[in-house]
Length: 87
Picture 1: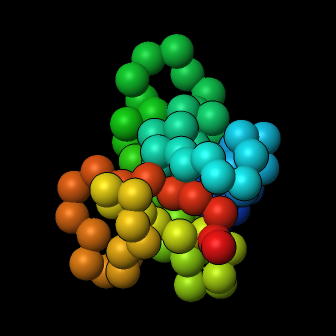
Picture 2 (picture 1 turned 30 degrees about the vertical axis):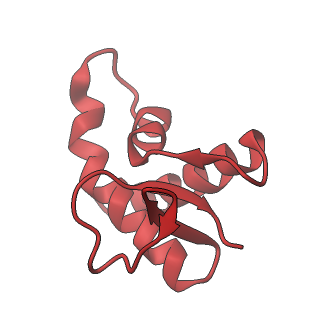
């Protein structure tokens, strides 16, 4: 994928959260869809890169990854996650 795609995914996460407000959450798929250029399901190939982008943003203190509405350690998150602005 490369660093350029990583940066696009990080920006997409932050921009989506900013547009939706301080208490909103997004799914990594929202960021994947936002940066994918095609009309098919190719955005699915960006799901793991989007999750990695979210983990990097957790490390920098900008977002939290949640499950069932509670912050979780990204290394321990299994299954569906949500992303929200760090509180």
